[in-house]
Image (tube, rainbow, N blue to C red; front, side):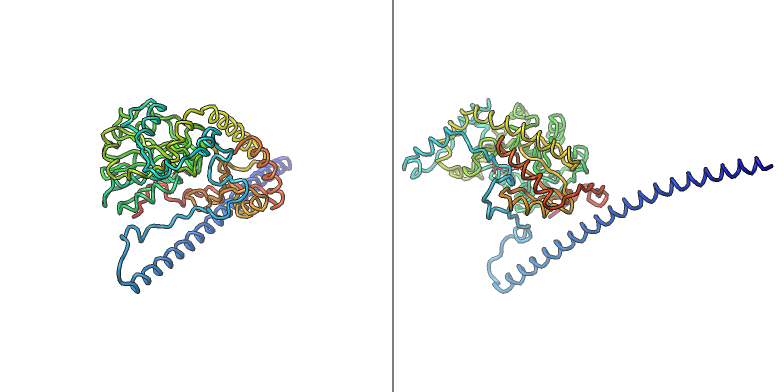
Length: 441
Ligand code: PMP
């Protein structure tokens, strides 16, 4: 009998221990959930603040407009959110705009120094430049339109293909100008949110295509995530929307990803844009190229200014294209530096997104603002990407040349210590974000 009681006691004790263990687990999970809820509430609060701010600005505009009574911008322009990249006060090591901070080909600088008055007083002739780019890329000249940076290429596509009632599809977070130029035409934008891994949301993009979809913009590698879409995914999207101009932005193609260049002229609705602002180190020169089927580009040329590409850059173009040794040397340093920066994050268990571009996005949570400020104090500019959809708490850092990467890693390490940084886990907050497509007008 006593033995039986003992056994019962031991069983009960065991059960109590298991229960206690389980309760502790539940408690831990509850605390984790509470933390996530807190983070979400903070984000909602921030969103509401931004909304309030936007509404105030809108009211202000309305008031001014009523007071003036006269000329009004188109409604699509009045409701457009303003995009002000933080361009002021950029002294120091500029690791904030994904520029090539190493420089550019010395051959370009040489030609630039020899610029004559004729180059400046003559209206620039774009066609010879298009011949050069076409030859360098293995395309027909009619498949190349040189533009004032990729920005102008996006603008021209929107002008050429979008009407009110049409829709542009973009996977966010991504480069802001797609949305801005599309909305400015008075048409709608449908955004598809990437998952928490910030991967290209292939299935959701495919599913969001409708007969109204007239433009699709995809950056691969993407900015600010550094993620790529595979060649198969991109081809499937181009083929699934024959009524849409599909722009594949290959601004960062020198650093990773698979080009669709061989499909130019094969797929009639495919456009690719390339820029001289990144690997070539010529962001101030403003040169981009829009590549597409000759028949489609013929239409796009109708809305393009004949002189938007300046004469100086056109005289330097061949030298830039020829000096592939410079590009290869710079790209090699970036890839090496990118691996080092990613290793730095891994060693410190700082969440980051593996990148195929010349920058890396990482999560610093509540320490983000302090880090950006501390880095600036140390003479290094890095980019706060907190406002990008799905990037709360994130900072993007551009990778420079070898010496610049060494300096970056040293200063980053010291800056983190100086602000008392402790790693934060990124809340699984994507339930609260519009995973499905969201429409903006
Ligand atoms: N596309 C992407 C994806 C970019 O990130 C940027 C610049 N940040 C651009 C285009 C702009 O290129 P450009 O300087 O040729 O206008």
